[in-house]
Amino acid sequence: MAADLQGKRVAILAADGVERVELEQPREALERAGAQTEVLSIHDGEIKARKNDLDEAGTFTVDGLVADASAGDYDALLLPGGTVNPDQLRVDKDAVSFVRDFVESGKPVAAICHGPWTLIEAGVVGGRTLTSFPSIRTDLRNAGADVVDQDVVVDGNLITSRSPDDLPAFCDTIVAKFASNSTQAEVTS
Image (cartoon, rainbow, N blue to C red; front, side):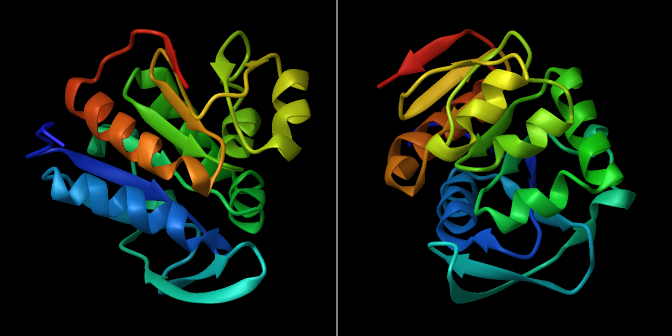
């Protein structure tokens, strides 16, 4: 990856139940490109990770509380999936407000798998083209999104992906888009 993220701060918003690989692999790709990443959550300490939503998969240390964070403190936002993680985030007013502020700021926001659930709750998917894990596509459509079945979709400052199977393309895309802050719409297959 040739993209340079030196000096960029990326917030990773996650809670208990985060799909380990969907936090870990993008974080590693961003850090290899020079970004500083910080895990924000709705509680301090550690968050519990899962593998395939069912199996325990260790923990991640929380760097800060989303209640204390501001979109202005970061250059980009990553929303990993897992079903339990975004289900908790979408009912937390601070998490939803943070995501809404981030999208409205025009800064890049990347969500994978079930991560777009928090985008729905933030009210920012209407009229946007997105992808996600198949089980939440109806939720996206009901919220006014145009849903496509592609490995990665970029619509303005939103970057979405379907599942862990798409992580190589997702990681490459977020590194490139976070580096350029590009807002051109495109669909990658």
